[in-house]
Amino acid sequence: MNRVMNNVTATATVNEEITRLSTAALDALKRDFAVFAVEPEDKHPLTRYAPHGFKSATKNTDKVCKPYLDGYAANIGIACGESNLAVLDIDDEFSCLEDFQSWMKANLPETFTVHTGRRIGKVGGKRAGLPVYGVHLYYRNAIPDGFVTIDGIECQIKSLGGYVIGSDSVHPDSGERYEIIKDIPITPLPEIVKQGVSKPKDKPSGASGIVVSSNTLIPPSHRNDWVTGLMGTLRNKHFSETAAFETAKAAIIHQCEDGENYFIQEEHKIRDLARRSQTWDAPEITIPNVPIPEGYCMTAEEWAAHDFSKEESESLIGTATNAIVRPLTKNLVLAPEKAFKTTFLMRLMAGLAAGVTIYDELPVRKPCKIVYFHAELNPAELQQRIAASVVDVDTQGRFIHNRDIRTHLINETGRQFIAETVQQYKPDVVVFDPWQDLITGFDENSSKDTGIARAFMTSLIDTYKVTIFLVQHEGKDGSKGGRGHSSLAGWRDTLIKLTRKEGSNQVRISVSPRWGEPVTLELTLNNQTLTSSTAVGFTSQQSELRALLKEYPAGATTQQIADGLTKTLDAAYKMIQRAIKDGAVIKNDAGLICLVTKETETKGEGQ
Image (cartoon, rainbow, N blue to C red; front, side, top):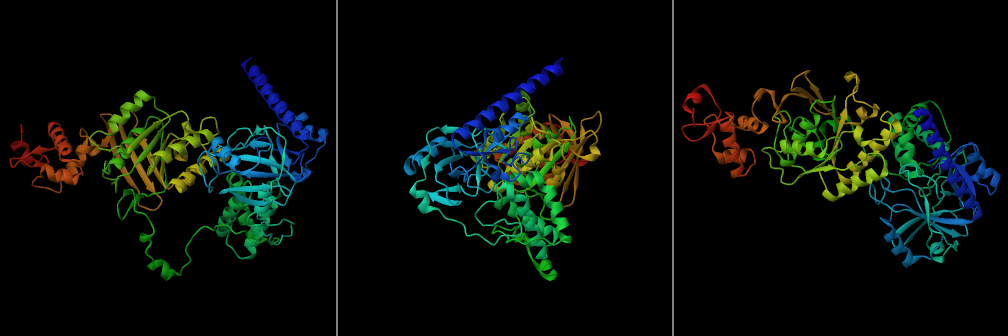
């Protein structure tokens, strides 16, 4: 019965969506727009009804309504040239409606206006990862496509050679609708636009007939042929498979209208095309002027002699000879349920925030600012975990914890919240714990969904220069890695894997950096935190104190301990008193703090 009711509800929802979109399509026809069908919740022409892309646009009511009568909740495409329109597409310039209105009032006459569905700035754009308020300004009188900058705001002109997505359509990334925000008659194209427009110089077209320009974006209807031609060009220039893929990746993202989303969704196809292009000739096109990934081209002798240490940042965790976690990297923390992964990671991050080594095997190189996004623990439990993680550690306000239901790695609202938080606190390290709870509502086994989250996290690294730690639950078969799509395993730089010994409070932690030697820790849960199994009964701070005292066989003063552990004199004194009380260290006859040995055990008894 429940299944029947769910099906009825789902069917009703789909029917409502079809009715809404078909009504919007008819409204576009009433405005004398030429309309064509677009894939549901997408920007690509729906080829079944628009075989020639936006050139299939029509003002025929029967043709426009056909997809909806067939049960497709098709988005609405508006061919600008056929509609005698010049639409100013302003995407990554405004942060909110007020910003747009202020600029509009000072520069352009009001006209029919649509608020686009994008809510977060594109990767590589002015407001990458930040809130944006995109608009389409509709003006009469079509002109060649191009760009115009008005009062510092860059506008793309979509007209004779392009199309826009109509109101009530659903944006593929945000799930938000395009909405009319100024429903007034369309104004003639103002002179300020005509006079300021820069028409990109067209480059020679390929055999496919596609004109390639360094400024004009390739529409989805032409994109596949264009990518094929690009691969042929690279093959004819003797690019290797890897070089062809990397160059094509940069070209697609910068040159195609839907480049970012297209690459995320079709990465495997592009890799396959790069591989197959080595065996065939193809029509040649001019390679667009896009940034090519930087690299090194040197002789073997030059490689051997080059000092890369001048170009690489020092590690955050590790030694000078074995970097374990480097800045601007992706680090995956993998463990089954109830394996103390959060307990371990919070303690490690507390040490990193304080600039103090918590675990000898994972030496901290310098203090960092941490923003830790929690999605699993309830506030009361989280409070206890935080308190335990910072025992004997002075994080000096550098350890920020965030527990907010808005946090999400895939939907636009969640990504906007994360970007705003990172921008506010400007951390060195960002932690997401755990992955599964931060992609709720999406498919963890989907390459598309996983790809969007990975691309967003990579954009955080590129935009805000952060290092990322991502906590992932292990699958049922631990030998196969984490739950969900396997692409995360290839995305990460350092893997931190926890294995809890059955029925015990002991955990083995294996740390495998891509560029360094692996290390292993044996830890035991003690007083709600994990301490070295070689010092059971002592806190991690006491274990660190004992390790320092090995350098002072005759004993150390409180000042020497404070200096060695980078603490204030008062904090060092309090830590020493607790350590003496717990039997971790002892004060000898000279008043120095030292390790308990057979010789000092009797002399120091009772002190």
